[in-house]
Amino acid sequence: MDNIIKYVHTNIIARDWKRLVRFYVDVFCCEPLYPERDLSGEWINKLTKIEGARIRGMHLKLPGIKDGPTLEIFGYNIMPETENDPVINNPGFGHIAFRVTDVEETLNQLIAHGGSRYGEQVKKEIAGLGIIEVIYAKDPEGNIIEIQHWEK
Image (cartoon, rainbow, N blue to C red):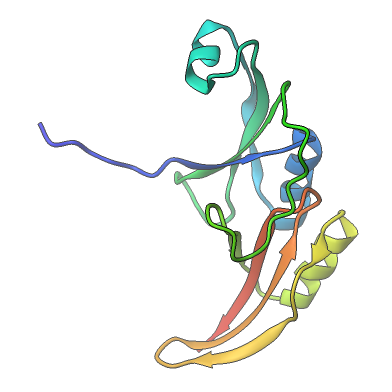
């Protein structure tokens, strides 16, 4: 039997998972996929290597995706004390990207909902692909988001 592989989700660990879910729903039109998750017990302790772990959160349906991968936003009851301040070139998860019709309007919505600008908004022709208008920004917890619009 052949091993079938399917990409299923990307996970973000949040300090305040409910606030971050609202942000992605309000700004990027993600849709909550119920039920909310509330996971604990010996199996979670073994899986995470965290004794007494409790994970709560939700999966979000991504805009433009019918039955595809989800964005999983979870929070743990036990979190490290260190602050995470992502930068675009750190190894590991770099950013999540959304294609939009209006970059400036989306950026303004992102800021109005607690996010922030990260870099400068640029417009560049990419040979063979078209013209991209793009900016990096941060969600309320500092995770980097790419907001892009393509013209042919």
